[in-house]
Image 1: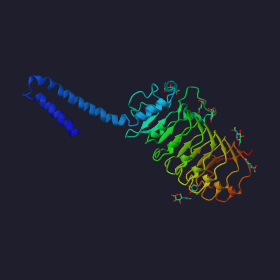
Image 2 (image 1 turned 90 degrees about the horizontal axis):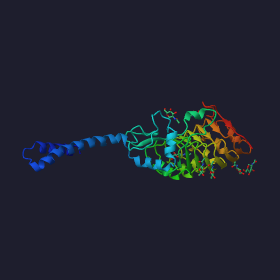
Image 3 (image 1 turned 45 degrees about the vertical axis):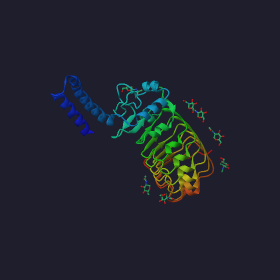
Image 4 (image 1 turned 180 degrees about the vertical axis):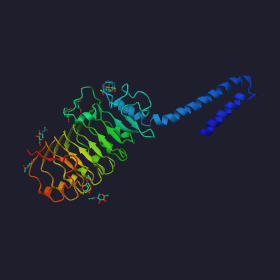
Length: 326
Ligand SMILES: *[C@@H]1O[C@H](CO)[C@@H](O)[C@H](O)[C@H]1NC(C)=O
Ligand SMILES: *[C@@H]1O[C@H](CO)[C@@H](O)[C@H](O)[C@H]1NC(C)=O
Ligand SMILES: *[C@@H]1O[C@H](CO)[C@@H](O)[C@H](O)[C@H]1NC(C)=O
Ligand SMILES: *[C@@H]1O[C@H](CO)[C@@H](O)[C@H](O)[C@H]1NC(C)=O
Ligand SMILES: *[C@@H]1O[C@H](CO)[C@@H](O)[C@H](O)[C@H]1NC(C)=O
Ligand SMILES: *[C@@H]1O[C@H](CO)[C@@H](O)[C@H](O)[C@H]1NC(C)=O
Ligand SMILES: *[C@@H]1O[C@H](CO)[C@@H](O)[C@H](O)[C@H]1NC(C)=O
C-alpha cells in the first residue's frame, strides 16, 4: 500500500513536470498532485483512527441508544465524574480519543473499560447510602455489553439498568478477559442465570458485584461447578430478593477456589446452613462470609467447627461470620 501511494505520488509528479503534457491534460496534471496529497493526508487520518476510532464504535452507539434518558443523564452526571470541562456525550466517532467519558481503550482501539456510574464509588463509604438525586442511566441490560470482546471492566454502579441478567454474557469467549463486573445499585430483576456457572464463561473474573438490585429466585447450584469462577475473589449478592437455600454445591472442591469474600446479606434466604460449605477443600481462600439478615433456621452444622475448616476466615478485612436466625 505504501508502495502504491509512492507510485501515485511519483506519477502525479511526473505529470506535473512532464513537458509533453498537452493543454487539456494540464488541468488534470495540476489536480493530480492534490489528489495525491489528499491521499497521503487521508492515510495519516487512517493511521490516527487506529488509536482514536474503534471497531467497537457501532456497539457503543447501540449501548447509548439502549439508554432512554441518555442526554438527561449525561448532563446530570459526568459519567465517571472525571474532570472534563463538559460531559462528553459520545457524539463523535472517536471513542478512543480519551474524550468519551467512561470509555477506555486498549492499544488496538478495542474498548477495555466501560464505566457508566451516577454516584462516585467513594461515596459508597459514606454512611448515608446513595440515593442518586440526578437522573441515572436508564436502560435495558442488553447483549450489546457482551459484544465488546476486549472488555476487562464493566461498571454500572448506581446506574439504573433494568431487565434480567443476560444468559448470553456467559457464551464462549464473550467475557474471556473480564476481571471486574459491577452492577451494584441498579434495577436488574429475575433470577441470576445458571448459565453464568458454565466453566470457562468467566475465566478471569475477580469481582462480581450484584448487590442492591431486584434479583430474585434461588441461588443457582450451577455456580458451584468445578471451574465456574476460577479467579473470583469477591462475590456480592446482598440486598436483593433471593430466596431458598444456600447451594450445597458451592462448597464443593474446585468451586470458588479463590473466593475471599462472599456476601448474601439482606435477602430472603432460608433453610439450614449447608455442612458442605465447611468440608475439606471448600472455600479454601474465604476470609469473609456475610450471611446476616436472612431467614436461615436450624442449628449451626457441627461440620462448621471442624478443625481446619474456615482456615482463612480471619482475614485482613474484619472477619465476619454473622448469622441471624429466625
Ligand atoms: C462534573 O464535573 C465538574 C467539573 O469537574 C464538577 O464541577 C461537577 O460537580 C461534576 N458533576 C457531577 C455530577 O459529578
Ligand atoms: C425497575 O424495572 C422495572 C422493570 O423491570 C420497572 O417497572 C421499574 O419501574 C423500575 N424501577 C425503577 C426505580 O426504575
Ligand atoms: C422488582 O421486580 C419486580 C418483578 O420481579 C417488579 O414487580 C418490581 O416493581 C421491581 N421493584 C422495583 C423497585 O423496581
Ligand atoms: C476440577 O477440574 C480440574 C480440571 O478439569 C481437575 O484437575 C480437578 O481434579 C477437578 N476438581 C475436582 C474436585 O473435581
Ligand atoms: C420470604 O420468603 C417467604 C417464603 O419462604 C415468603 O413468605 C415471604 O413473603 C418472603 N419475604 C419477602 C420479603 O420476600
Ligand atoms: C488460606 O490458607 C492457606 C493455608 O493456610 C494459605 O496457603 C493461603 O494462602 C490462604 N489464602 C489467603 C487468601 O490468605
Ligand atoms: C427450616 O425451615 C424449613 C422451611 O423453610 C422447614 O421445612 C424446616 O422444618 C425448618 N427447620 C427447622 C429446624 O426449623
